[in-house]
Image: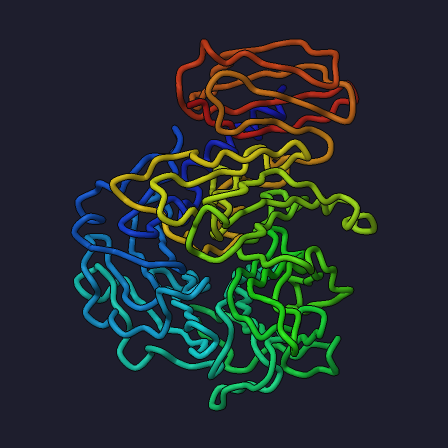
Length: 494
């Protein structure tokens, strides 16, 4: 018990000062939500959001400070401060409101108050570029640094942009999908078939982007990882890294052509200590167009949507597919359809939230959807999960560094679902399910003052814990099994 009290104090201390950069999401047509300790809050009627007239059809990104206070947000073309005003030098950014992942915000390593805004253009024509933003400018409301705006790294690329923090480092890898012959000054030709990874590096108190892509040993040390398996002339669809940095996944939405297989979903390996991609590239989907793609918080599952074009009609459909990654040799045998909308559905981004669940964009809808229990084989989908009106959902949700989501969610792997002990749902309103591969001994729940508010003996592999008598808020759940192993979870009671 003494060891747990020590860990509990450390856990509470960490959470009090934990990073909450992904707390605010600003997206769609004036839509905004905030992830709080008591659940999701609708911020679409926030005065600063309303007066900003923010609008994006697809890509966007937003960032908060370590306490969860909104700092700024962008659609890839303009950057808005926390008051909803466009920053003085924040106009004319080289992203595109109709680009799948038009922008991503990276906290500059080792440099407080500095951010890099990465952008990709639309329709495969725009460049991959970055701008440097410093919060000390514009009276503390932030602005783009003159002379460090729209610095082009690749002259053209697809609409895919994501990244992952380098292992055991504050540095970050940022990746895009383009042709095999593109450079910073010349557009590429042919199909999109190559992944280019750049490094955001901190050195002392400085931070910068290395101008050349990381050489890929699996492609003769060239500046890209190339594969004809996912070659495509279409640029739409998401690129995502798993939170643990071991996988990357690509979704491609398009239609079959004579020169390329212009659709599908693909999985490949990544080493987040070196920035190296490797195969074999697994084809998860080859017969259908795919747009949104995302990993579970524990990196054991990948999800993507099979969807028609962006305009929902009586003949358009959307399905959400799950694959289990826990047994790498058996991935292709684990395909599971968790949702099927046969009509009036269309493509939409999938995005992991800091509560550990995956959210879904639905164009022209006042609700965002959610994949529930996404760290289990029993995942389900709620189409109309959360109302964001008066905002309106479009095709995109904020593009967020997955390692940031993970650090926002948990202190260590002890608090993430594992194959040993799993808890669900989280957040929850009335009960907590617990399952384990070994027999459980007990569960004890503490409030944030460290007081035990519920204790129960189990002697079973699964349990259903009634939480109806607990007040809404954040709790620490300690689960012991009969072998003496202990796991601690953060749970939100709605």
